[in-house]
Amino acid sequence: METLSAAVARLQADGYTGNWFADDGGWLVCETDGARFDTDHLTVEAVVRFEGASDPADESILYAITSSDGHKGLYSTTFGPETPPGDVAVVRAIGAHRR
Image (cartoon, rainbow, N blue to C red; front, top):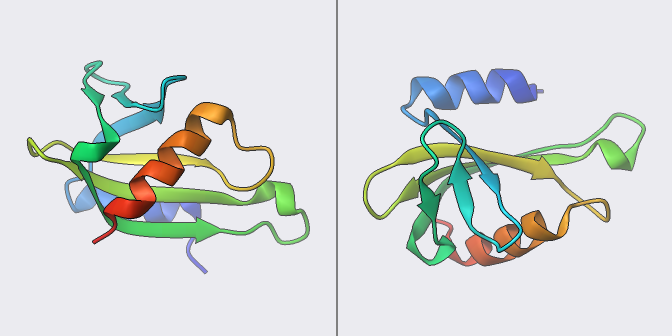
């Protein structure tokens, strides 16, 4: 089974170099340059889920995303009841933009 760090390295090698996070308003923000992305202008190219061996709280999800203007980045969050509200909004919104 692929680890999170191995999946990140593999996707970075494919050009997904931005490290993105969700803000409280449900936008994705690039940690490197501060670019902000409306989820309506994103395409999810790949999704990788990770489940904890014995603890459901260890679940996480990794997205490889391309913006309409060509930015490529990775976004990850916990997956489940402990997911922060900003991340819940982003996960719901980008679910409709999977390739």
